[in-house]
Image (cartoon, rainbow, N blue to C red; front, side, top):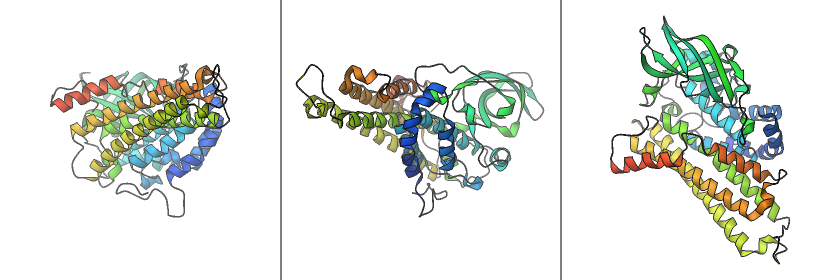
Length: 401
């Protein structure tokens, strides 16, 4: 499959990016306990992802990247999520940061990918910092939590307030900073998605030149400083991209849960305190399994629609309208709910044994519960945003639309 109006994802005789991701599922599944134990991705995972070119899915083709469309990218991530939710999450966040670098001026892009085509970028959008205006840029001090994949990155995009000479905030920005200018503080002690290594970045008095600061207010309007206006991928709507990419790991986790339960059932698991020696033969098992699979299919349909909407509008002359952007948030919230419901049913099939440490389903469940509660996924907030749009209420509850 080719990217939407950009460059081919692969040549005809090479596997597609989703096929490359699918080929790694067994490896990622085998290494998932190690990722959880060490609280970052194993070197073997990182090496396999690099060799498969999956860190460069959203990197500009000018620097050897695939510059693929969002619909293809979410398929890649959901495949990886079948094997390891943490790996899928890190690939998602690093690639999304590469996409944001593609929105910056050519000069900034050259500093990252021109110097090293294999450079990786992590990021934290929350502007938990202070800034001082100086000639040619901003001097920034801050702490940025939860920088997923920071152990594997050479650059970071961090949220900052942009201030004028009087110290008054005039904008919110994303500052591109070399990792060598940041300290990584080990703070990621959580019950799920432990392998993402989402630790805290700390920086003191870092000078960030203007060309390495992305204006968030302008980006939310589709006003990007890149000179390469013909590159369709980098015309995609800002907030919808940042939001929908977080749903792809959730779909992958649910699929991984279904795979795990099917594997157990095919081994002839009995239902305790019943006459069922093989739970496959129980109508209750069959019905819960079918309902879980249907919920996962529903989540996939929402994910595909949202990604296709973003790609379609990016290929046209107009920025994605607000109503469609609110629907992407609703689709994302719906994916979180549907995948959570599917995993609940799958856990029911396995009973208390689903929570044995040796059972991958309990790790999948914990990963889904943590990832599905990221602030921008929040289904209740997404529903409110979409409801206001349906009613034509102009005042919204967040600028992140």
